[in-house]
Image 1: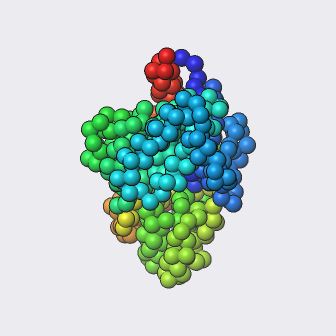
Image 2: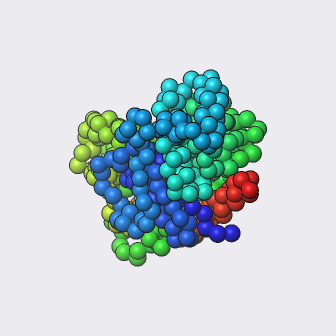
Image 3: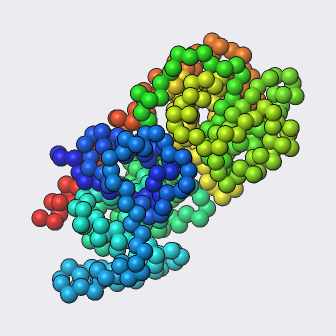
Length: 413
């Protein structure tokens, strides 16, 4: 089966916090998949990972600046335009019942993407996150374009704003829907209609194990690292309070928080409130090379994830997988897929959610027990090789892309 022509349809690309998307595309290119990237919005003004320079795929913004452009395809005089107009009208009638406030704009975007996909002979469209980009992919398919698939992650399936009926239609119409852990599969089975549930497949996000590997350098003493977006579900306030508890009992630890996000001011205020400014450094967002340098030198990775007030939560934090691969012992919580990363605590430490004292104790125990750290480093690397090899994940995903494209081609004969 030949490598398919696949378009990744994304809200923005590249994004510093979505390393898993860049890694996946690079692995697909490595396997020979012909990739294009359609970005619905301009990229943010932020650093770019060095790996981005390896990308071969053209990145095209598909949002039209011409208000008339999307609609011109509906006013042609040929049979194809007439069929498109008929499908368009039926879809508007059907989907208006979901009362999605951005649906008119998504229809316009879908017409632009449909035109690009046809012109570039795209055989399959893949979207990350079961949100607006995936809805555009669904509309493109329903309007006569190529088949699509979706990777569902966390906020797109757990937040209280998720519409299970619309999500069920999105998944049911897909060739397949990937989700990143078994916990997500169980959650989706509980909210999706049966036709949609049958389309769900679990595929762990993989990483480049050649780039993330133990360096053999001497690690810093009592250095706690946390690499994550500065948002509620990452649990930064828990970590700040745990570090304060350690300081109060005379244990000298320092921490580095890497990332940016909407809660930066809240986290800075929490650090100031507990008088931890001298012990906690906030670096902002860093590229992967700088993150790898920190992963190689830190003593432990602490990511005390929590479930947010709106239901949002982490499904499979990439930073924990990268830490395992680099032999950095991890401390986290039993939220969603984290036990799957840490093998239910066999290759990392799992503490209760929102438990400051348990986080503090885990940090002190690991920092003072070199033998335990060495054992976790060995087990963690083995776990990464067993479950999170990006090459293996890419091969499986490429096979699914090819099967989808082949079925669509057979149906058109």
